[in-house]
Amino acid sequence: MTSPHGIPVDLLDRLVIVRTETYGPAEMIQIPTSSFNFSYISYIRAQVEELEIDEESLAYLGEIGQQASLRHAVRLLSPASVVAKMNGRDKICKTDLEEVNTLYLDAKSSAQLLQKG
Image 1 (cartoon, helix red, strand yellow):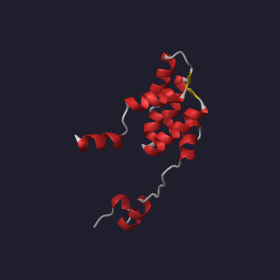
Image 2: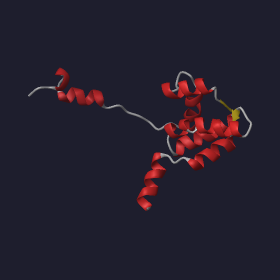
Image 3: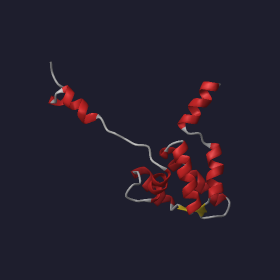
Image 4: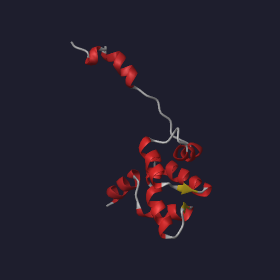
C-alpha cells in the first residue's frame, strides 16, 4: 500500500485537522480594519477604493459578521461605499450598511430562502 505524499495516512490525517473557533463581535470589528488581519483581497479592495468607515458602522459590521459570516460583512464594504458616495459622503455610515445589507443575501439566508421556496 502506498502512502499519499510518502507520509503514513494516520500521520497525514492528524496534520490536516485544524481547530477553528467562531469570531466574536470584537474580532469581527478588528479584522476588517487591521492591515495585519485583513484578508489579502479585502485589504487590496480597501486600499484601492480608499474606504473610510465610522465606529458605529464598524460595530454594525461586526454584528452582521456574527449573524452571517465575516466574508459577507467584508463584501458589504464596497457596495456601501458606492451608496455613501451616491448620498454625497466619503465615509460609510450605518445607514449605508443597512441599505446594502437588505440588497445582498449571505449564503445561510440564501439557502434558507431556497428551502422554503
